[in-house]
Amino acid sequence: MKRTVLAITLSLVLVFTLIGAASAITDGELDGNGHPYVGLMVAKGANGAPLWRCSGTMISPTVFLTAGHCTEAPAVSATIWFEADVQTLGYDFDDPQMYPNGGPTTVNGTTYTHPQFNPNAFYLYDLGVVVLDTPVIMPAYGALPRLNQMDAFKTKRGLQDVTFTAVGYGLQKSFPDAASWKESRLRIRMVAYPKLIQINVPGYGGDFSLLLSNNANTGGTCFGDSGGPNFIGNSNVVGGVTSFGKNGNCAGTGGVYRVDRADDLNWLATFLN
Image (cartoon, rainbow, N blue to C red; front, top):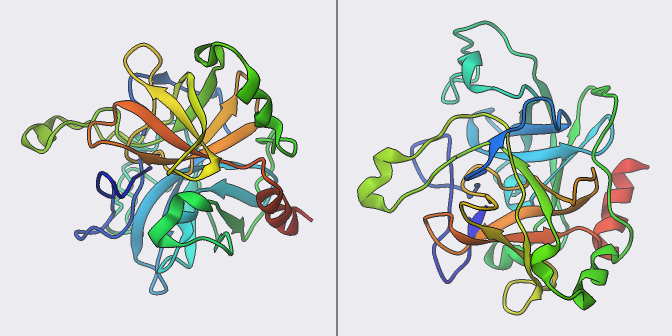
């Protein structure tokens, strides 16, 4: 999840300098095997060094859907885990060759970013994929929405009754800088059920965006969840990917990039075909 230009860019980075932006489920619950096709990705540079981590969804045996700011340069590749609890694997994110507690099952792939993505206005086309080197066979995958499927929500009364299922890895809590030591960074797949607050948000992507609730009642997203899915209701249909936040506490609302627009679906089809 990125913070907008009105706040600051949010990030969970895997090196000592701030390079990218990502976000994680807050006030949620353990996902367990609820969404095994949702994974944790670590983007890597040309030299193989880890850059940042994000979340995402397998939508076919070889295509992992995530956010554009998760795959943007200098990233050229990514490693992905699908275990519900990556934390206990003992993986050293600063040294991708270290597996203190044994070797977890990982897959590697090449990163691609929406051709219209612009880092200075990332929320307009915040879409990316990782094409895997080796297919990952699963009983089920995430599904893409129909063209303009979420436009139906614009005419619904009581948008608070429209629920999404947000899934991701990353911070479970975030606090102001003075209390940053309280942050919970467990790399565990979590799930929350945020409500739709606003669709097609002016200034934040227009008809490409959603704002979902982020509070103790519904849960929400935070640093480390970027690129993670926001499924429509209790389905496996990815209405949008976690994109941005509006404050450093991961509270109030979370921004989602819709993937039901023609340019997105057409671009994704080039990988699925």
